[in-house]
Amino acid sequence: MNWNATLLARNDNVATILRPVAAGEIVRVLTPDGVTEVVALEAIPLCHKIAFRAIAAGNDVFKYGWCVGAARSAIARGAWVHVHNVVSKRAQS
Image (tube, rainbow, N blue to C red; front, side):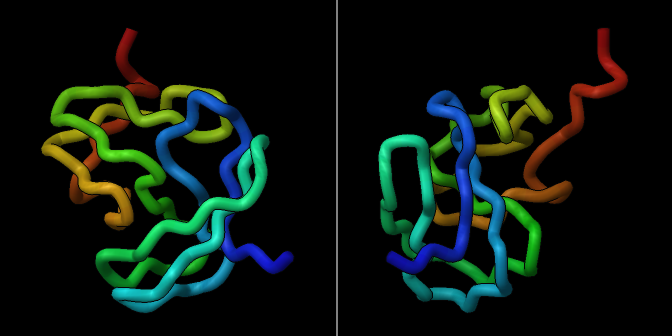
């Protein structure tokens, strides 16, 4: 079964895109529980993140089992997740 995004941990709410995808394209995401489809709401570049689940404003963004930031605003399932809608938590203590 082909897939073009990966999500490594069950608590992840974003997946990593393994090839550029176009808006409206079905993205097949390999998860620990199998392959799931998500429709890309916008074009997403190679190695960027797609929201696997909706993320409320202020909620943590999880990738590879780690918190990588917080949502600046609500992020819909299938949206591109990047610096325009996530603030890093790396420098915060």
